[in-house]
Length: 249
Figure (cartoon, helix red, strand yellow):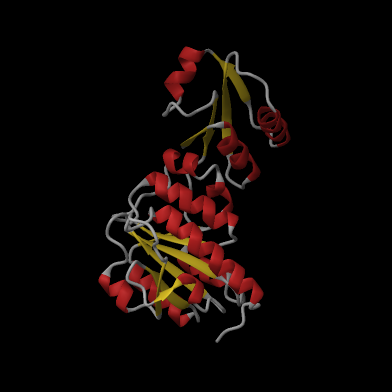
């Protein structure tokens, strides 16, 4: 069972397909549009809502960012990689993002949120040395976890190889990239690889990529947070892909 906290995350949870077991509201919670929407959706889905004392509520909540709303839901289930490839096999403009050892749950949540906003088809993470989907990740994603296919794999190198066989062009997004991201040709089926905090894309993944791109820097700071970098490149990739109609090179 997962604990989901916060008004917007719980609302997005109810909009998704995951089974919601129960919702708890802290006694004395102020009324608002989001809370009303939660109650309406919960009623439609026959999800029980219980108003409980602040003391009992604090015992259920896992963080201090709950906003007086907590939901109990079935455990998050990652999308199977082979099923994902079958799902997008006919999509000519599919965009996949792969994360190489992004370990901060806040960064992962932010990347999930940006991925959903920019219409990314799937996000690949690894089972080891990567942040999993947790309540903190869920909160940072503002509930976007429910609307994005997230795939957890044992080997990122193996997943990249399978994507290549499925007709994807692989782009390593790294500070030493050969071209700036706005010079890149993002037409066709593409995968963007982003490296973990402070390390960038691993050497083997970088060498096995078809292309490498960087974000130009104009200030004194030498790098961007991985979640910010991901959002910048994802936006550009989706815009160019749409304009070019997803046609392959």
